[in-house]
Image (cartoon, rainbow, N blue to C red; front, side, top):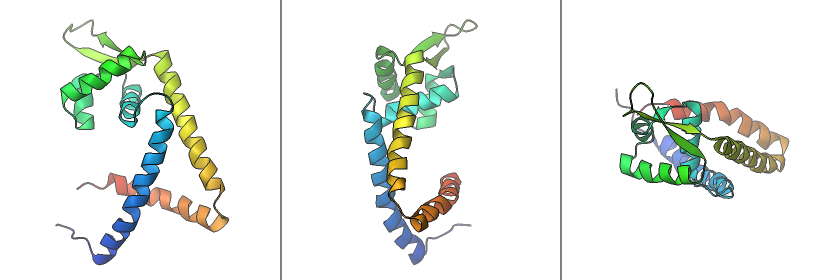
Length: 147
């Protein structure tokens, strides 16, 4: 069954989209303070969550081409944030792992983004803060909806 958006859905989407895009852009700026891009931060988070992840699997997860990914991984490796680890069982298999510096950068990014967001939330009145809190779970479910 195909679900067609109603006028209400379209109106809400038109209001929500620019807000979410701006929020994402602002959080990305906080990441760039550490000399990495938002994309690179995402790649580091994915590798942190799955140490030994292969380039092929990471490219598939992110929906980018292996050559584009390779360029990003090269930069992260040159920056000392991750390393390529060759498998002892299959020398053709190369996995990715964060370095201690990569772990530190990710902690710093998370702390800075959280502080930025907490500062702005602190400027809201109680009713607005409750409304934002109430929206978190529905927004989380929105991300889980499959197309």
